[in-house]
Length: 210
Image (cartoon, rainbow, N blue to C red; front, side, top):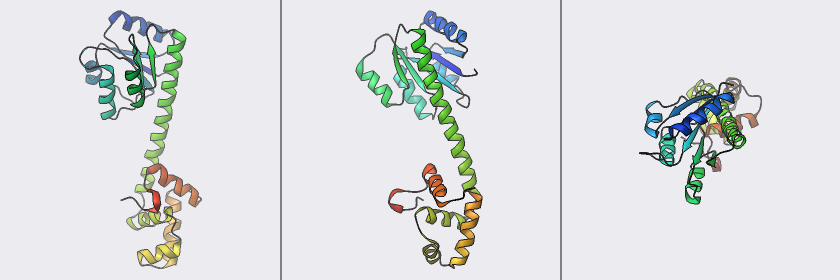
């Protein structure tokens, strides 16, 4: 297992005990004594990983660090740890995207389950991001006119309508359509519409996004 677990906790003994426990379970572990320390050594989220984050840490609190990481675009899932759980903080953290909210002391089995869920979610997110990157690269290969045809196809226009809208012949649009399908590596209209939905290039109501 090559997943990283980043522990942010100001309690040195708890940090060390958690690090030992997780290393024995096969994880790679990095520890930080404060939120600032983690921000100064911002973890790379290209590899699979997650953050175990104490709620009450000096300086920037756990929820404040969560907000900062969201602003920075970090995709690492966060599992909160706290010795003082309260409903408002729990709800706030989960709404902001936290994977879980655990109360100290934590049973090893419960902790490992939470970490594995967080890692699985991160792996899925990374896979989706890779897929979107590859779709964006395909879309970028379309010529300006092919992109116009793409946008109109996924909004439900037929060749005759597209030809009228773009001031060209239906035969020309058929040729452009063939090129669009080939460059986007799809066999059907349904696949093309699905790509547009995934990339957010198709607005509701059939309007083309800018």
